[in-house]
Image (cartoon, rainbow, N blue to C red; front, top):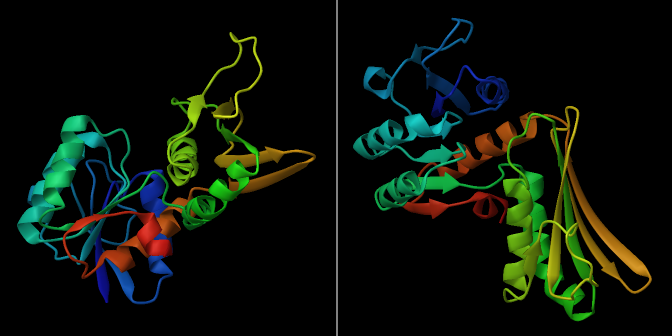
Length: 251
């Protein structure tokens, strides 16, 4: 039985992870770490890592940057691998993550969806072929009207997958409103749409002469990210120290 310690357990993603783990054979949540708890969760919730008195095989983290330092200290001290889903980490915290990965296994990815990471793998295979055939590449991402950053981290990760496969020849273009010129073959356009309650919608468009190939991923709920995190946790148990990402899980 894989025992999970869930940080940020009282948040929306925490509740999604709890629900998916409860339906996953061979896995259970041993406890959670969250400053706030309404007592509705069926496992003990600790306010800080210093309070934790249960053992776990892996941590799934959907907390916030203020928690990361103490979480990494706990992980290193207890030799517990971690699926790190918190975003917006400072360069200093990213350095701490890299240092911790010398001692424990850390899985961190721009998007926890299995579908998105499978698409990234496909992009690495097809992008050089289509680019050499003269196809232009554009990415359009759509998210809810409460999202603060644009373009999304996932859109950038998708663009990076294309660009890395094509030897870094593309220049990312985020806004053409101030430009009055033809599109250059080495442009990779990234556009953001914000509205309503769109969870996440990404189109990768390869536009060639008289034909267009579009790869689309649409998330209908945050549960897809929670499911990916749970799959990542099962993968990470027993792995050697180092940095991993969702591509390792998919492959």
